[in-house]
Length: 174
Ligand code: GDP
Image 1 (tube, rainbow, N blue to C red):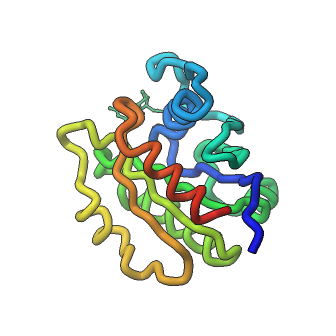
Image 2: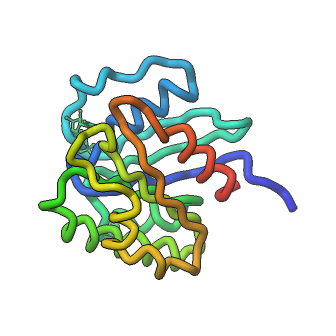
């Protein structure tokens, strides 16, 4: 079986979840190029692209901003993706229901296209962050059986968990 050498991964999630911050940190981790400092990054408004090398694979990340609904504009991105990442703000309980609905859409797309899916439970550095054990229950993650799935705790601020998650999705996607 041949492995892919070029992998496309979509990064999705509500606004303010930390997508832009995580993408910049990934660029710092994998390309040895300094990303934009987290405090300088405005909330995502459009499409951010990041290209980096992970274990010999050329990885292209598309950060679609808050767009998780399958509008015609985004269908192409889902169809071309080899892996999907959903980023959530683990500390913003007030938006968990909204995040759950958005995650369901991403999960359906992952199952439709048969690609690995990872949730980055971001902002775990915050004291009010909800644990992945609780998030797993609240988001019905035991029901995800059709595709490879990982719930990865992380922090875009400290970078904890970021490299681990990226290695997982690259291994699953290639
Ligand atoms: P996006 O809209 O999903 O692209 O979110 P941003 O990357 O713009 O982040 C939104 C806000 O959350 C910014 O103020 C970031 O500095 C902050 N942020 C992102 N990740 C983390 C994290 O892991 N921990 C904390 N404490 N703040 C974060």
